[in-house]
Image 1 (cartoon, rainbow, N blue to C red):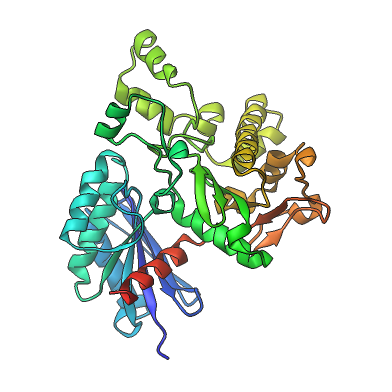
Image 2: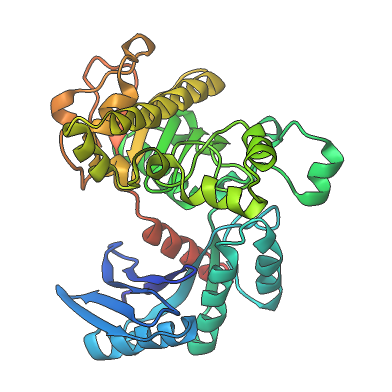
Length: 399
């Protein structure tokens, strides 16, 4: 049988990340990133067959960026014409209530993604640009949109609903949409398989911890709660975002500091979280500061892990218990300090990790709880590109 591949494209505001995924093995045949689009000097990095090809040049827009990507496939391999590309899968952050799963892209889908930009102004326009450029440059391959919000589309009403005037909420589409859904779905299903558990009877808390961070409660394979809300600002403390905060802080800063809505938006999204507390959004640098005796950094780690612990307790209560806790994404997979601190003191809830098992970075699924722990704790590396590729293939097969 001929090997099939899917080209996965994640188009950001000033970057394009991509990966050519071989569906049989799940391996990345090639991957790369285009960065600093629109700046005087941009960069490209393409990895294939153990060889990294890099370029520095002016990349005026996403169209030129993707054209350069396709030329790198020609120069550095593999040849897309011979790679049996059956689909191009595009990551889209916000699907609103319009999309509860991946869809084949057409003009109407593009229109709806554009319409939903009001709910994700930093993401959807860039995602849509990648789709339009991709369809223009690769017109003979089906393009599929895969939405971050889809896994949370059917949240219970009590979890998705904010307690504000219902007419205002309905008019302006104010509800909890969540984010990182592709990762939460991939990890919750993968963990059950890894542990040999029946997904239908497994209660899992997934901790997707990266620069952006979110947590979900997954009961029987279905999301029943999640920390991110109308936007990715709500929930856990993140690299540059506040996470949960009293909304009256906005009124206070407007009235007493004279800050505009845009200035407060910038503060809460880009100058808060770990960066606001320590000046650094990278936890590795924060840990270095802690080691040097920096009390602000020590407090930041306390605030960061305490918020995670609160969500674990909350979601265990929502599901009436928890069978599995899964750490994933950049911090979740690589930061043993955060993992240990987040679960510290939870032995009374049947959660106990083995410090030796927990030590170090984890590139493979790894159980880090003790044999006596009633709740199994796992580090399970996420692979959003593979998840997008698989969903894109499902859509193409069903056509």
